[in-house]
Image (cartoon, rainbow, N blue to C red; front, side, top):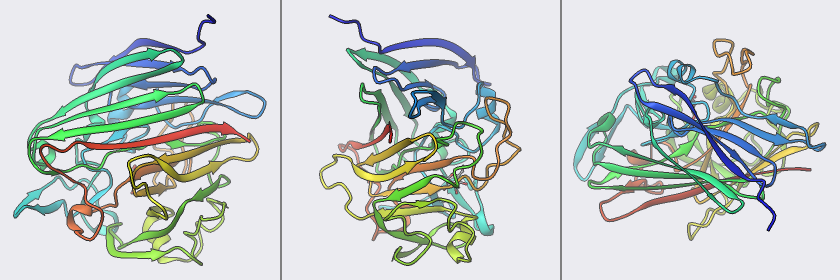
Length: 363
Ligand code: BGC
């Protein structure tokens, strides 16, 4: 039998400032894609994608060391939990009890809890278990979040499995159980730039979204409750458009976000937990593209509006506005305060289970 081209290699990276060991796992896929991930918040730190000629380039934003991630709060390449995106005023009521969360973000002067709070699941060492099964490689990350973690109720045990398949699919499977009812809304915050990390912006990338509606936000980027059609607006990506084509047009929603920073509602979300196609991103000069498939009902498109030269990436290149785009699959923002939105509440005895795939290729 031919030996597989796939392998997993591990290397000690660093200790966190609180003394936990962080390892990097290199996942070499049989299809040619290679990625580095580590157990500091399950971060993906490098993603080598071939172009039309087969030339590999690292196409995500990130740092070489753990310190960079500890200092900069842009969530580069990170897992996000317990609740991805925003909860208005850091408050919600569940089964008659009100919970208060850290207020770590205040767009437009309105305070909220963003991405799980001041110390979300992105900022912890997780337990890593690398694996290889034939041509398929990956890492399982587990983590236990105690009752009261960042104000959220319930001891939550969480497991995230990263798999790199022989056909160049990065699959992310999320699972969690709790001993008290609690909201859970996990995502991955990787920023892509299909030219290569530090090589200009994503404004010339073609984006397609299989989403004909969006959750309209107020100046604090909190949903107002209105779910609006994207038709005839700069948010209509139901056919491919360059991200930069309409990003600076006069539009209140774009002004609130300083660009795209909005939750899109999938036209035909998954009914049975199997992932459906949510998005496509294509860069014409290299030919690189990716598809996002998910079991989640929404996707946040964040065009890197707050990236800038205060962030110097792993190759020493200062970032700029729109250096990368995050495509975060999720339930809608502020769902714990919006009973009309699909529920994010997980109860004891239930298992939170979602899956997202980033499928890479060239055309
Ligand atoms: C949010 C942005 C926020 C960014 C932080 C995104 O998921 O939607 O509003 O600024 O994360 O890096």
